[in-house]
Amino acid sequence: MLLRRIWPFSRRETPEAEDVLQAKLDRRRLPKHVAIIMDGNGRWAQRRGLPRAVGHRAGVESLRCVLEACCELNIPVLTVYAFSTENWKRPVDEVNALMDLLVEYLRREVAELHAKGVRVQAIGKIGALPVMPRQELEQAMRQTAGNNKLTLNLALNYGGRVEIVEAVKTIARQAAQGALQPENIDEQFFGRYLYTAGLPDPDLLIRPSGELRLSNFLLWQSAYTEIWVTPVLWPDFGRRELLEALIAFQGRERRFGGVKV
Ligand code: FPP
Image 1 (cartoon, rainbow, N blue to C red):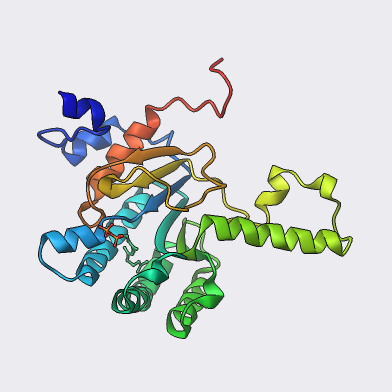
Image 2: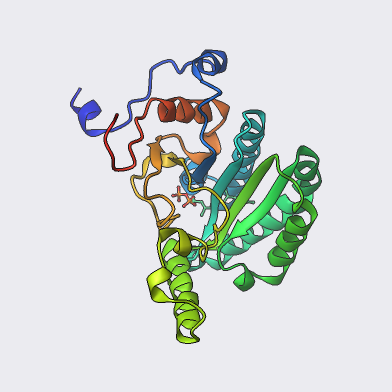
């Protein structure tokens, strides 16, 4: 009982079946933008005595599965945190494994993503990625640019603070050149200088693996995002967990700082 009080998420003894969850979901009130911190790959692998890279590979399968479900549910935008500006601090073997996985994923999946109507986009300092993943990503973005079923937004070499600082620098440069008036800067204007320009803010942010932090992800865009945390590690995250998150989201009362009328 005490554990339940301090542990914000209590797993049910017998998880609900997918069809029970599907029946609970109101398909008219789904989020327009779901963001996910794909966390827990390392722990998933370590618990099995496997290299961390195996956990990341298993994480790609979860991404496949969640993307498929989002397509079925007509959720228009899915943003996933695949590599942060801080992830360069990891051992070089792990960084290389992640870059190789990205190349492999895009080569293997892009044709199917394209056929499904998925538009691949990226946020982050993409120009600083190694040549192979960068070229593969650019090719995937070009090939799928005309699609509108779902936008798969890959956060790669992404950091929320860097994103804000870059936007401020661009705005300051333009102001110094007299190309814009500081008085005209408001929240909407600022949003156009972020990597996510043109995308709606995330309605729902999912964090697997039980950590209760944002980890520098979509800091500006998450101002009024509903956050759902689960102890399930990302490689074990599937359709059922996505449905649980969506149902929890539908149970939230979103006031955006106002009051319920
Ligand atoms: C965090 O788990 C996860 C990452 C840093 C990488 C996420 C990447 C993938 C799921 C695969 C690559 C993506 C694509 C699009 C091909 P962690 O390693 O920090 O886990 P831990 O907290 O348990 O150590």
